[in-house]
Image (cartoon, rainbow, N blue to C red; front, side):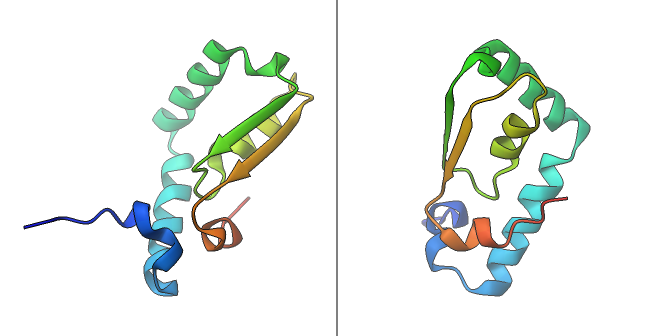
Length: 93
């Protein structure tokens, strides 16, 4: 039996399923363990000195928004995802 990955086909999902994925991504993005892991990763990359950051497969843009919010980052953040609708549904807060 072949399993499918809904994250690989976000450009062809109906709105109800897409909203479930958006909610999941945004909830995970606010989890303290995920936030710490993301900050550790960005610190290791020395992202603050970059003039441009490209987040490919950004989903709802959790990581792109985290980069843009960094106090010492003054560059430009570009984010792109397979589904334009995922970014449109983001729950930025």
